[in-house]
Image 1 (cartoon, rainbow, N blue to C red):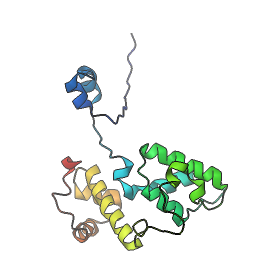
Image 2 (cartoon, helix red, strand yellow):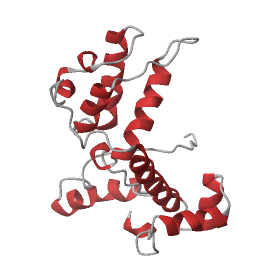
Image 3 (cartoon, rainbow, N blue to C red):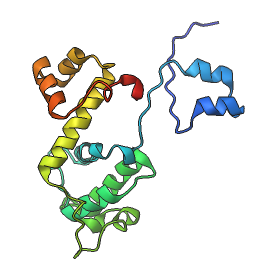
Length: 190
């Protein structure tokens, strides 16, 4: 016999508690695995994360010393309109596909996978909702980012301010500006 110290990280898109009740998943295994439950919504419900994730994948795929390719407005519109049933993994593959086909040039609609490019509006018909004013998009991103920081800290504002690298006073001002109240910031909601 040998003593081992292991940690198991398991992920699923299934509701395991419901599967246990239906007898589809073993109850004893469920309680062994369910120490810390982190609910991560699918990408289609976290649209504000799309620019950050795309930039992350572009930087990771860029060869050392090369510039990170830019993305045309048409390609951005296609990415923003697509539902990503394959979630973040599908986005990563789509960005890699586009980087390879673009060959160091700006990523355009024809460089994206067919499923995503097909979701884009025709070239002559830009959708007004695909690109909003930058101030509106930045405000939406900041509001969602504040909520995420507070969720990660269990609603503790002082810890959230430290995590965000801002003062408590600045955090409280931002919460007021975004009209985020205690009911919306309840960590149990997540």
